[in-house]
Length: 233
Image (tube, rainbow, N blue to C red):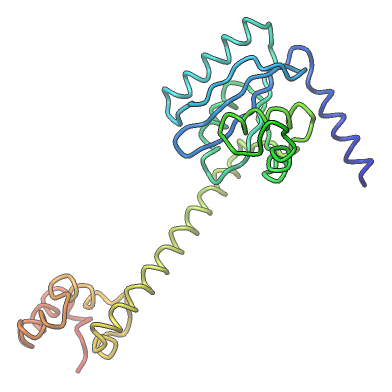
C-alpha cells in the first residue's frame, strides 16, 4: 500500500519540470496569499494580499504572466486547501486561464508547518509557501476540479440543502418564541405555515396588541385576506 502511494507521489513529482511555475495559495474569505516557486523550491515571488475580486484576480494574472516571462516558465501548477467555499472563485478563474489547479490536505499543511524549523506559527504567506512545497513534493490530491453540468447541479443541491436547514432552524426558533409569549396560537392555527397566522403576527405581533384590538378587529383582519384560513372557534 505504502509502495503504491510512494510510486504515485514520484509520478506526480515528475510532472513538475524545469518549466513549471508552482504556486502555493493560502485561501481566505476576503483575500488569498500566494507564493511562487520553481521546481527546486526557489521563491520567485510572494504576494500576501490577492483579493477575492475581479481586480484581485487580474492582479494575480498579471503577476503570473510577469513571472512566466521573466523565468521562461510555461507550465502553471497551483495548489490550495479546499477551505469552505472560498477557494471556488480563484480556482475557477485559474482554470479559465488554463492553469492546473490541485488540492492539498489540511492535515498535510499542518504537519509540514510543525516540521518547519523556523516557526510553527501560522501566517497566510508562510502557509502559502508550505503549500507550494507540498505540491512540489507531489503530495497533492489527484482530484481534478469539475467543469461540467454535474458540478453546477451539485452546487445547486448544496445551496438548496443550506436554505432548507435555515428555514427549518428559523421555524423552530419562531415556534419556541411563540410557545413562550403567545402559546394560545397553537390552539387556533393548524400549522406554522397558515396564512392567517402570518397575517395576525404581521399586524398584531404581541398578545397585548391582540387584546387592545379586540376580537372583532382580529376576526375581520383574518376574514379580509384569508377567510378560508381564519382561526376556528
